[in-house]
Image 1 (cartoon, helix red, strand yellow):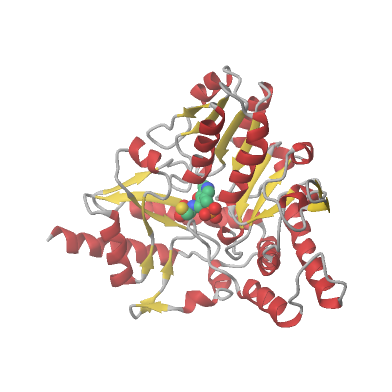
Image 2: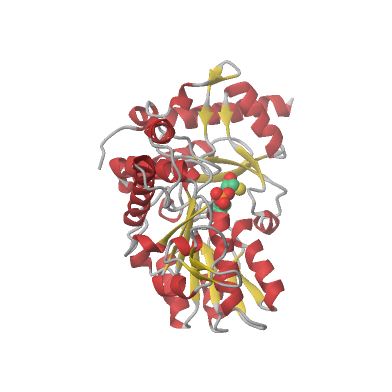
Length: 411
Ligand SMILES: Cc1ncc(COP(=O)(O)O)c(CN[C@@H](CS)C(=O)O)c1O
């Protein structure tokens, strides 16, 4: 919708004017954390400079302004994912905490010995370990949907697992390693047909794709501000109202209560029942500014831009000798995350050379997805990822860097 070019967008991100090792910074690790536009930085500074106060409690102007700003941010987030009501938007610290909140609050109350939880082989540790801990606490069992050689879920096996009537199904909307975009709407409908509850890990989808939680009919949907142009320290748990109303609090403390006696307390309404203590106020305001920025660009623009960058990158990378790409080749089946290996060059060495020789920043490692590394029999991969500020010149710099690394490592 915006019609702006990535080159124009780049000017909004102060850090992208940086040099590293006397070369322009080429930031290709937005999957780990995105960069921040000036308007997000300014929104947070303005809060600290002109209306810094605690929320919900003060009966003075700047506290009322801070409270209003935080709740405006919540409404913006609710509209951004098309939640029916902003009460369904719980502010957490990050995707990891959002998933843990569901595993402890909904899980402890609803998962029992012998119950089945279905996950997939491509999950991030944050959407795997909380369920392992829940299974250990309750005696539930985990089953996993495998991934094909080119990074797609085995939906036939997903169907078979659903026949065992799991209580809970949890999967990522987009893989942070393979870039695979899963058919979540269809997977949710199939899980609901056997009365399973579905949690979607949206850490890599909300920043990059239009997400409509009502159309998807997700029961829980989780994501982080720092991956979508916002600050670290704040994330979101979206949940269906009836589920959130029925769930016991996750953490106890100030704000999440209605009345407190020495021996027992009653709880506040949604969303505050799940927001104990002083919230991340500046971060909520920053997230609100990030949502405004993305709405200005339009998520359709974001998705199309990233598809263009991904198509160009796949085309260029495939010409690098000895380079192996992991994940779907079809642009419609993947987002702007490309994991790859370059011959037998260790990804860590490759990332260091790229940083030192060309100013290119990519991720190297297991990307908090060790089971997926095992599935592809690699100790680690290199990973390049794209966002609203990525240009073809960035990708050219990466490819030139890879050729330079080949020279260094093959003589
Ligand atoms: C699919 C997916 N699910 C959960 C998380 C966790 O997000 P937090 O904001 O850290 O809680 C991430 C964050 N993945 C980063 C850090 S490992 C990456 O470099 O891939 C993710 O990609």
